[in-house]
Length: 129
Image 1 (cartoon, rainbow, N blue to C red):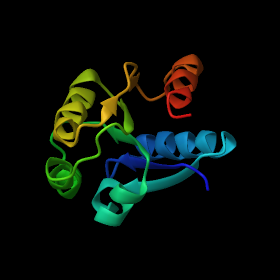
Image 2: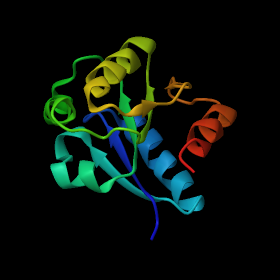
Image 3: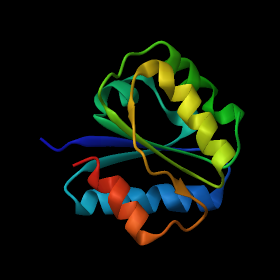
Image 4: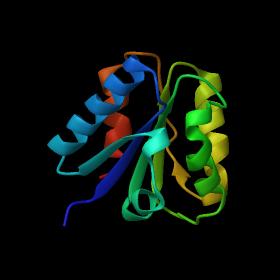
């Protein structure tokens, strides 16, 4: 059975969607099954079925993450890895904050900007294997 990674991206941002889909393709190439969803489409079964997570945002506090943020406050995902990608440090800091109660293990490297370096992407994705 393949490992499943949930890749979540903030609704309404085409560049962020491209990054999420690129990450999904790279995960597939590593033998990991990606589930790529807009934040507003994420469900409890999506969260529970995944063994790792990639969260992306271009702005802090975006309403499309409302249900995801609520889920992450009430679910224990202790020990599962998570990584973050987005336009800036403020958006990523916000993602880290909304995921902290779920006890995910946050990657030490964030993917910042519309086109993160290939070496950073590879390093983050290797942390899932």
